[in-house]
Image 1 (cartoon, rainbow, N blue to C red):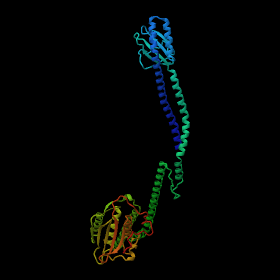
Image 2 (cartoon, rainbow, N blue to C red; image 1 turned 60 degrees about the vertical axis):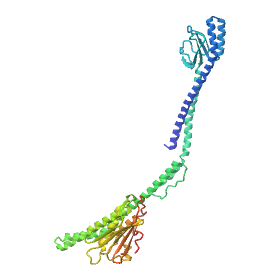
Image 3 (tube, one colour; image 1 turned 45 degrees about the horizontal axis):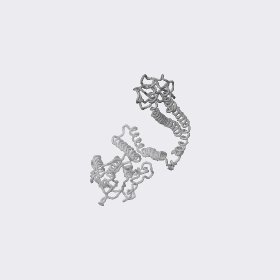
Image 4 (cartoon, rainbow, N blue to C red; image 1 turned 45 degrees about the vertical axis):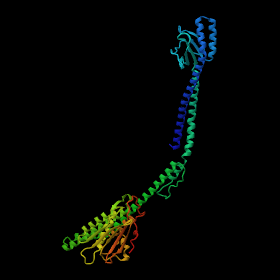
Length: 493
């Protein structure tokens, strides 16, 4: 059912009910006013008739018929249009009666008073007022009557008119309500037509709403626009997720082909030569283990890149960078017992970030330094990690004593699958570092060691913030893009 129809029905029902309620109150007020006026007229007539009734009873008891008839005529003349009955207190007989009143067989109230009462008989009713006649015998009473049917007829006429008005008001108010409702809901229908013509799947057009000065319609339009904006955002994120999944599959299939073929060759050698020399068998098995480890590392790193492309702002929490760097350095030292890893952490800086991603930044920088940063002839790598705070930012440096990275290669090392010929890694570790630094609004750069000795320094700058509002990059394509963005500062020497 349309809203305008509902409003019309509601108005068509409510208005007659209000008319009937108002009419009921009006008839009660009119009835009360009519009875009050009728009672006041009875009291006025009674005050005029009472002295005449007293004289009538006196001459009646004195046995003067001529004077009694004269007093009766005077009594009826003074009563005008009301009924009068004079009751003698000696034996309760009626000394005189006339005018509209109930028959003698209708019982009257025994007590006399100043307040009129209603007396009913044979479908008729009267307002009756009784007053004691003083100066005579006890029980002398004057009764004054007025037909109540006149007042009742007036009240009934008012009730009929109220009912007639209610019957007329029902269809009239429904039609008027329908017209007003149709006019009032016009902005809503316009909004429905605009919203009904939108199809986010085939058109980029969005809801164009002009203020209608109807609060509810404007609020609804604002809600729809917000909903469509959220839909666009979620659709974009879904598209990015699908593209990331496709890129993950493509990259995995491309990069896994070579190690899988190598593993297949080694397995075929083992299967075809069961009597292979033990030293050669051990070499093949070692080669298999190396390829297996490379496969696992590649899959884990690709998964981490996909997570970085899809992580949402609500995953960011307060992070203690000092504790994170210390724990990462300790784990790296345990994995490489021949190396020497030192960590210098200043007053614990805190920021808001994705803790697994920040841990991957430190872990991958340390792994890169431990693998490539060993000085020639040294038994193990020497790596120095430092974390210090400066106004508004935290600076992480990782120094090694390796051969260094040429200036021409410092940009390429952050690209996907970029690795040296003797590198045992997947070529994704530094890409993962650049991705997470970009995700956290920071910068990474490669420089020479500041003391002039051979080696390389990786410097990561992260903004310090503990506010709950996190602004992520609009486009994240470290796994899907052909040339990922390098965070600002990474090209600096």
